[in-house]
Length: 281
Image (spheres, rainbow, N blue to C red):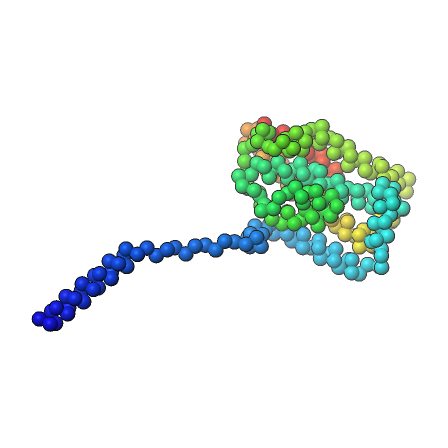
């Protein structure tokens, strides 16, 4: 009897604790919130980030190895006379274009930021676009390194865009004004006259600026990277506009061809694209 009673007690205890375990809900482990740095790493765009790192490395190395005060002298000449400094005309035009290329790039970046299903970057584009007028890709590269727009086109109408983008950046009068301003840079700085009168001296003087100062070489690299970045935005921008106008038979190879053609006329080509591209419906 004692053994039977002990066995029954053991069974009752086991069933009791088993029922209690079934009643107790084990809380799920909460996911730890991601930090700002982790968000940047997970949203990095490798091509743009690689270009940014390369730009910073080149700028640093050139600055360390340049002759003493070489870049400061160039900067001082631009401070004294931004349009006609005592320096090579072609480099003067290039330096001024670095401050203007942010305008056509804004015309491509801002509409796509507003029409995406989710923000294409964890950063805001506006401050980096303004900063590009002074720091070039040194500013814009930070934003582009986290730029990951939707791959599929998002059907957008002009009314979906923000007030500033809709009335200025999408305005064809403003687009052609940007084209005229950028084109006039070559005339105002005397680059066209210098090329027509003595092209060899113009090219030779340009090479001397690149070889004698870090600012000269880095500015050329900067404009090259910005031009390639701007061209890379064209295929998607054009695709979205074609879909917005119900032209679903759009061939992506056309966008790539147009993008490559803009590199033949750096900065001017991108500005022309913005002026000639289709409007949103």
